[in-house]
Structures are given as C-alpha cells and as structure tokens.
Image 1: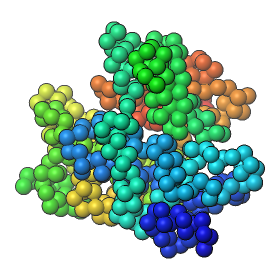
Image 2: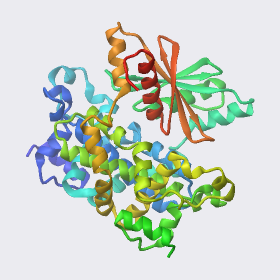
Image 3: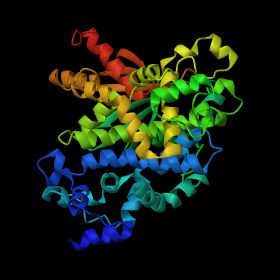
Length: 226
Length: 226
C-alpha cells in the first residue's frame, strides 16, 4: 500500500479493508474519464452520513435545544471550514489524486475540495463498516468543533442577527438571490433589503453563501466586528 | 396503550419500546407549552436519518448514476408529497395531537405537518433502535417511490430542464430569489430570467419552491404539460 494512504488511516484510526475504496475517495474527477471513478458519489453518501452523526450527537447531548437551535449549530459545525481543518489533521492535502493540469493549478489548496474529500472518506467508511463505526470516528474528530459551536465561539447565525436588526428597524423586507456557480463548485448569494442589493457572499452551499452575505452586510452597518 | 398508536405500529411493522416516544412524535407544538415537548426535535433527527437511508439505497443499487443524478433522485423521493403519502399509509392523519384551536382549523389536512410527523416517527425509531433497524423500515416503505423516481414517473428536475432551454436560447441568466415564510412554514421562490420576474413557486423547502417556480415557468412557455 501507498505509504501516504497509511498516514491517513493512522490519523483516522481506521484501516480500510478495501484500499481501493480509500483511493477512490482521494481521486478528483480531473484524474479520470468518468464521474463514477472519482470521489463524488462517495461524497454524496458521506455528506448525508456526517449530517446524521452530528444530528444524533446534538440531539442526545443537548436535550434543551430547540429544533431551530439544533439546525443552526449543525450548520456551524458541518461547514467547509471545519472539514478543511479535519483534512489538515488527516494529512489529506498533497495526497489527493488530480489530473495533471489541476495539480499545477494548486487545487490542493482549495478548501472546498479538501472538505469534499473528507466527506468522501466518511462515505467510504460508512459503506464498508456501517453507521456505528463511522459515528465513533466522526464524533472523535468533530467533538472539539461541536463544543466550540455550542459555547458560541464558532457558531454565529448572521442571518438571524440581521433579521432581528431589520425587524427592529420596522419590518424591512429581506431577500436572498442565490446563484449556483457550477463550474467552480461554489454558491453566491446576493442580499436584498427592500429590493436594494446591499451585499454578496460566497460559500460551498446556499446556506453558507447567505450567512456570508448577511455577515458582510452586518460588517458594513457596523453591527458586527471582523 | 392508545388503540390509535397500535394502528400506526402495525402499519410500520415496529413496536415502540417507549410508547411515550411515539406519542412525542405525534405531538404538534400547539398542544404543548414548550418546543421540547413536541415532535420538532425528533423531526430534525428523522429528516437526517431519512436522507441517509435513501442516499445509501441509491448509492448501492445504482452504481452508474452520477452524484448529480443521485442528488436529483433523492430530492424527488424525499419530499412532502412522498412523506404525506406515507402518512396516509401509516394512518397518521387524525392521530396527531394538536392544541384545540389548531384542531378546529383542520391542520390535520396539512401535508407539510403530515410529512413532519412521518420524519419525527423515523427519528424516534432511529434513537430507540439504531440505523440498521430504521433502514429496513424506510426501505420497505419507500421502495415504490424510489422505483418510480428512477423510472422517471415521479422524478422531474424542472430546474435542469429550464436551464437547458435557457442555454439553448443563448445564455439567459437565471436567478431564484428565495423567501422563507416562517409563520406558515413554507418557502416561496421567485424565478428571474435576465432580471425579470417570470414566475413564483411554493414548497416545504427552498429546493421544492424553486422546482415549483421552474415548473410554472415551463408551463407558461408551453414547454411542459400539466
């Protein structure tokens, strides 16, 4: 086996029975001629598995949080920033298999791709060893992020904050106009207050892009520190 | 035990060890003074569990589908329409515990609430008996919907269809402006083509509202039959 893959396994605390599955989770689509031979399908699965693990952890450990609070904290935990931090811990960077051109363009530094690969690895563990095994691994990796989110250091729901401020100012209408930038795999969201565009944000999901747009407008209004 | 609850258990093929958990899954917030004594937290959990079960089923059974196809089919399967159909099968209607006012207003007929309760029941089974048990129950209930989605009878991705048509017509810009109608618990999405509003749609998620808006505009253009 590739020595690099062993490094990832050691950091995960998990040995893959099928090493090709880990290799698939590390393969960017630029390295293959088919969507099926890259990490994307595993990422689809791992993303859903990660959501459920974090949902269960929050549900069980925080019986006093409402559905809305649970949802907000889960979004704060399951985001590209957390996952690219995890990618760092797992030494994934530099081990992703790219096509030549992309390698030169330093896709390796792209935190969205790092986050996708982490999800794909979770998907691979889930399909190979089931939910309970994956749960242990994810809880172990993400516990510090969940605790930060709960204690409010990581978590900030800018959309809610903005809504509260706008309501104080007399029911201004807020709307988000979302764009999916498919080529580059990110989302852009424009924030409108009373039909006037006031800011725009970016992220790896619509939710993140909207939070970013709300954050930027809060900054502009002086309601938020950087 | 309440005879009504037994009816639901028989339809599910699952006996709750803790009958209070099923009761919680059936309790609308109008019947309680606290968000924690209604189905909402269980719905949060069940929603994520349902996504993972369907994701795994599609991943395992359709190795030739791309991530994008898997995502589209999953959205077609996991929607209020499917879940309110399932609610019908499980005889959930009329067994939901409402506050008096809401009962009179026939919330019982609201398909979004029916869908939420089904998710809450899934959440309750997951927390009581784990992923593998829930998986069997959901696959059993949803298999016909997944098969319909795959064979294209249920599934129609209007957003993609619209995008393809607009591209044929020379790169018109499409944007969705989303509103969350919190009070009534649904989403509204306005569809803009080259900055001109052309339609609006409604649904229980942003995704559904955007699909509905795209569908309505396709109808208008005569590109889609009702």
